Image 1 (cartoon, one colour):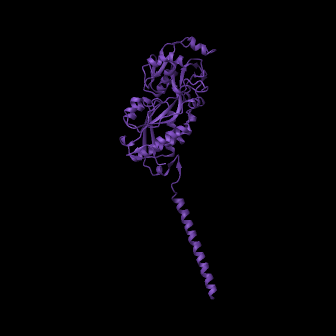
Image 2 (cartoon, one colour):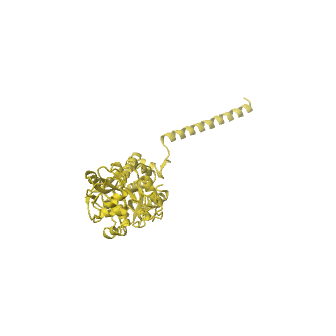
Image 3 (tube, helix red, strand yellow):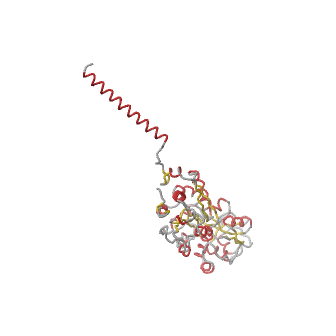
Length: 393
């Protein structure tokens, strides 16, 4: 063999060797990729591989009945995505939720009322996370009268004060022409338990009636001048549906799901507005956009207060409110809390204010505006366990 032929064969063998090395490397890459996929998929900023390796955990919450349909839906959908995480939420009313939160028997509370000045001062590191917006509506059972009966704020206040006692009172007849209102006594129904729905309702009555504000006031629990008490939204709804000529108040999603008749309420523009996703959104849009930070005092925050005198909010339903999740900034103060559980809680909170918002509109709650989501993000990122940040986004 000639020297030139030897050199040519050597070059050929070298080229074949390089090709074989490349093919082996490529094969190894694809083999690795199909059996060990890298952990790069994320949902709302949370790495899904966290959940694949997470130990099973149950998160316990309790509180408001106002957002119960939404929390129940969110909890079920979240568990479908991450079966290792179970969310156990007890709908016991905002008052009960605040109590369980303050004594640290739950991982999170839920309330339609922010913590009062006294509650905020007596709790170490509470955080408010507004996670949805809805409305409270006057529900009634008047034979032959469908949804849409008109009310003004002062008329509602006088009914709950016991000053207007008949359905055919001249004030009700005047604003409901053509409606056959009976001469029957109005059976007033209210919540018997500590309730965020009550807080929202009495907030509104306090804003539209000086007599109500001075003699009864706003709170999760008040001394009712008249009426029958029912526990939870379901208790009030049960009494209303079972007693002709009764009038109560319920969270709108609850009234809608259970097909309870409800009324329109006059707003500051003089319009009688039916509760709806659109009229709640109009109220939020017209309300003050200035909100405190998550770790600050929220006792003065009220969409109702912001729009009660706003005559330019023509399409706003006046009894509209935030609903809050309550958590601690430092999670190690909760008995039984560990890092795994803390991560699960923070991840659920993050998902709730992001992907979870898709379930709001179908249940007639208002999805959070972008500015509120941004505020919630900053709040959630401050949560710690043993002084170390828990957020993993």
